[in-house]
Image (cartoon, rainbow over all chains, first blue to last red; front, side, top):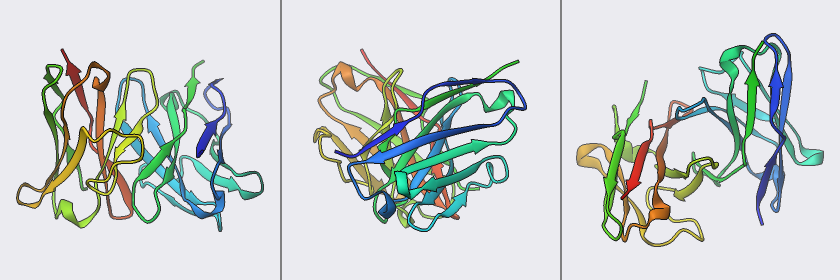
Amino acid sequence: EVQLVQSGAEVKKPGESLKISCKGSGYSFTSYWIGWVRQMPGKGLEWMGIIYPGDSDTRYSPSFQGQVTISADKSISTAYLQWSSLKASDTAMYYCVRRYGGTQGCDYWGQGTLVTVSS
Amino acid sequence: NFMLTQPHSVSESPGKTVTISCTGSSGSIASNYVQWYQQRPGSAPTTVIYEDNQRPSGVPDRFSGSIDSSSNSASLTISGLKTEDEADYYCQSYDSSTWVFGGGTKLTVL
């Protein structure tokens, strides 16, 4: 069974750094792209970027380029999303997703990680 | 920038059929596949349609997707509505190396 299991909720202060994780199981982790999707409170879905764990090829949405870093450790089948300096506006739910084959879309979603940034 | 526009909300009665539209702002929506995601309240999204009209295993055949090139739009049709179908639905496609989501449609089954 394919699963994407994300790390738990985080509460941080503005200016702090953060790295959240997404562990894939039930499939060949290095053979599928893993993406990240943001959902701000009460809002819709926004694509942030995507990584191919096999060779760490990474693409970012122009809206998020330079704001976050996406990485992966294929030895432990885990993808990451990190911030070097959080802002209150980063408060959101973050989902990791598995890209479906050659389609520019996803088939599996993680359960989400809620990030709250507040002073 | 390419955008996908969905109605903010739709409502229908149990047992009926509802169609949610997703209109592309430019170009041809048929140039890239469209996916549809369901998000029930308080839950993560799940995929109900991929590659325009394909259903993942476990998704009932009450859900179907289609493309209408003449109106540059995609549609999600849900037949035999059940109260459990009440959720937000998002369409998604691809343009200029970016995944693009529609703004979402809240389906109320009353």
